[in-house]
Length: 241
Ligand code: URA
Image 1 (cartoon, rainbow, N blue to C red):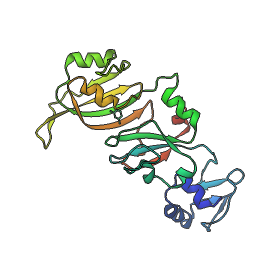
Image 2 (tube, rainbow, N blue to C red; image 1 turned 90 degrees about the horizontal axis):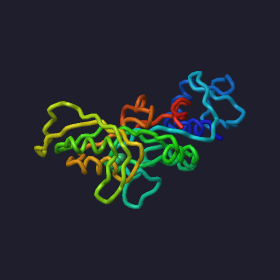
Image 3 (cartoon, rainbow, N blue to C red; image 1 turned 90 degrees about the vertical axis):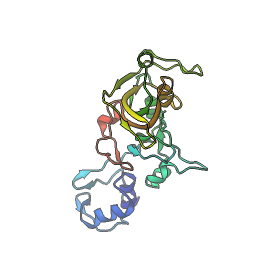
Image 4 (tube, rainbow, N blue to C red; image 1 turned 45 degrees about the vertical axis):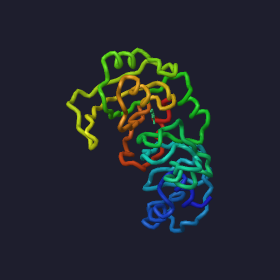
């Protein structure tokens, strides 16, 4: 495999960014600084380092991505742009896919992998993985509504939601351009039903105006603070399941 392709697969940036790393002498193969961006390597045998950090030759990929709004969480879509358009083309060849889904107008933490069993454990595993959202909403959440969110609620169409955690931010709120008073809260849910957060808040007389996923269990937006950024998961992050 070409070294530039390998490093792009490993999320070191676009091919052009990888070429810059090579030009700057940051990339070594078997302890020798390389100059040729089209050099062929065998990832199973050759030891590749970038700035003296070993690049693991794993075949499985685990990535966290800061999804922007305006993109659907899908590998392909006939009408809308997909998140895959924001990631290296190689991800498609490597069969990397999103783990779960964020709505087109939701931002935040999204995991991607090509490890099906791992993805399955995150979504449907025995361990209840908490997903935390920062929510802005108009309207007032009633005390009864907040209690129902905490105890486990049934939505209008009969969908049952497990008990969730909610922390209301006790401030005055902010007036938006439409003249609505916007409040915010933190909500952690342990499943991923269709439009779940919007529907839970809706069932308590609120309307979500902005939604951002901030955590999946202990995985956060650290090191992908800006939308569009992505990095490999650390071993510790991978081990949440
Ligand atoms: N709940 C929602 O309503 N939308 C999302 O994107 C994620 C959770």
